[in-house]
Length: 325
View 1 (tube, rainbow, N blue to C red):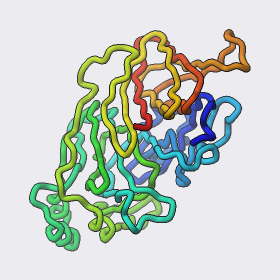
View 2 (view 1 turned 120 degrees about the vertical axis):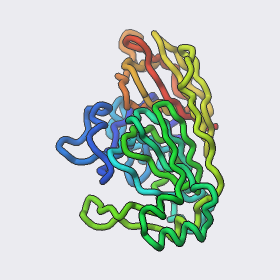
View 3 (view 1 turned 180 degrees about the vertical axis):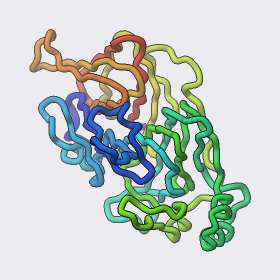
View 4 (view 1 turned 90 degrees about the vertical axis):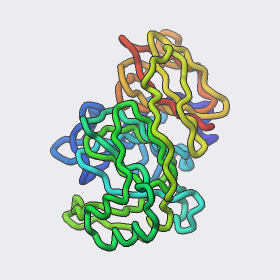
């Protein structure tokens, strides 16, 4: 990541993904969402992955993708909107021998941003399910038998859910979720309700690979780090995974930040509006460059970046920040 050292805070344009389970709810998050009835399920807001690299929108690097600037960037951040249940799926670990060349395993964390009444997820396998139980249920293709193998959990806005590799999982209908993950697009589908894809054909399943990597242990407990008040302008560590640390913070007024010499800081705006300004030797103090912030904005502050200041327009800015551990 040396090419990003001493650069400046970069804002990225989201890359939108059409999904059979998507909808139009992300319009309230992103002004540049594609028009029309296309069901959008994912907005990739920070990515160097070949499946959806995001582009810089500000400063001298505007128009360049993160993949061009740093093809080995290890983090991928998305905002997902689910009008229907996602497929039941599982991701492999880094050491899985059948990964495609250049692809890592996939560990991820979800933060529930919006949840309809009664919304739920699949998070792990039901108590007592064995490989034989799961295999026989999938072979029967009887929906009730298959679904009985999965552990369904109700969720609400503010829930933080860890999804380590091997965890059988699925987001449910009625959720908007921020997803922080390793830069990988490897997903093995176990079950998809017999659903047809956008192209009108049955969606591919990957039962053999999914069974190969599925964990039969109970997944980590869901936490609620947003359930209590947080002091303004003070980051709070909420979890670590796969070499990353995840922090939440609330900006009130103006917050001066110092860039780290050792790690980037990826910042996703969850709520509120404001600006981010930074020191620039090429600009007078009165004309310091700035970025407008709103929900869904994702800013990458490279390691060794100049100091910068976040200003909140009114009320508070809710932020999710990710750094290297």
